[in-house]
Image 1 (tube, one colour):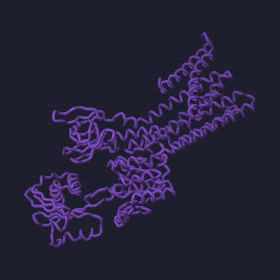
Image 2 (cartoon, one colour; image 1 turned 90 degrees about the vertical axis):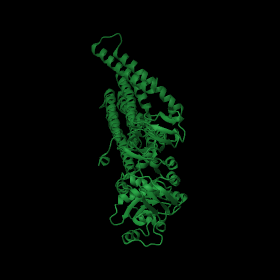
Image 3 (tube, helix red, strand yellow; image 1 turned 60 degrees about the vertical axis):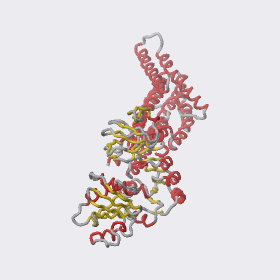
Image 4 (cartoon, helix red, strand yellow; image 1 turned 30 degrees about the vertical axis):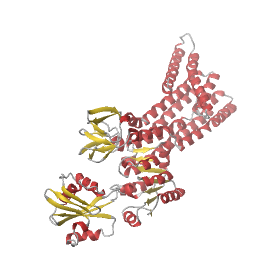
Length: 617
């Protein structure tokens, strides 16, 4: 019999014992007295609790459940079996309530593990075989049917796929992916069947990492929870002292029993774990993975935020910034012709160009007679048009820039950008500017972090100072550290951490040491940088910066609710203890009152599963 079933069984026994005893007491009928029935219903709870306490004591733990054991034992010794059975119901009901609350808080986390991919469809010369996901090898070509989960990480082979990534990233709408795009396990095929090539084994894929982190989140204890456990231990001697004093002053042992009954520290036992598990669960629902309650608590206390530049504050690649088109030329048509030609290129810009064209839903043509000039560009034919694309030397040779292109040249003269010239049939038709652009949500995200209490923001980058200063002019930062090696990044993080709890946000392999050195490391995990994700305490699965601010809000709200539950619960218990010591509360009434306090505390702790007012705003 597992613990959850045992707890429910004890609760049923205690409730039935109370009910039968009340029936016998009111009618005066029955072969045995009501007191005997109540005592019999209490003894199984006392026995199980005593064994549990001894087992914990044997491994070096001593919990405050001992107060419940003392109160039930005292009630039986003082010939108060009705009070004893009510306390038994209170204790057994509290444990069942805790199981329910934990189950509710862990529901979103459990949903992630329950939907793990189980099988894959591997293509071969003989057809398609259905295999278990752990049999997939890197390089296997897989078929993903409509409505199926992607079994492993991979590369899309077909031209287009529509994926529901909500379970992994929290993004509510399906995402369109194109040939060559990276796909992540655990996402759902929301369109037609497509083919992909496995790039990782099942246990090394995105979804397996999520499952591992969920397991860690469910078992790790936050320092706050451990502190609550330690504080609760002081309650036992304090309770015995108050109970003994009440007995000594009044000469009535029933007063001492009433004090013991209302002193069970369920607000400490239940509130903190339930609240923190709820916060971790709420974060997971938004595509933010916390590696346990300790990460959540640490995040709630952060006052300094350090950001890597490339891939964190910026998009992290050469993105199309602007198109300067010749008079009477359509920029979209120029982009379509350039992207058509770039399909034959292996240059780092080629993917960005093709992706930009597809984002505008432009129909590409097949290039022919393509010749690539290493480091300079390429030439070829598209739809019988002769095209040259690349550097000024390749496209214009010694010819001067036409007047319409000079303003753009002056505008980007000292900027960290790449300029691609495009000539059609020997005439310059357009100039494309590419650069590492600021994320669309960066300004709003940093503003939200400020309003959440982050006092200092620093950009920490290995890029040169010119690029860093250019970016810092666009956003609200307190300091910039440029040209930093990984070792210098760690030193900068350590220096900030000495002044205030510090969060480091990064995405690259070179950020991993700094992430590990920070009070809280936050990895932008959308691009699958394994080293940074494993070094981090928090992983943002969406390719956006706003979830970092959301994570801070969730962490702060979770910690506040946990504190509210503990302080309010203990305050109510203290008032009840004082009233019991003065003879104002009987043991039975005290047990019922304490049960009400427990229910209120747990319901308040479960608020961490929902959205706060600021999140809704």
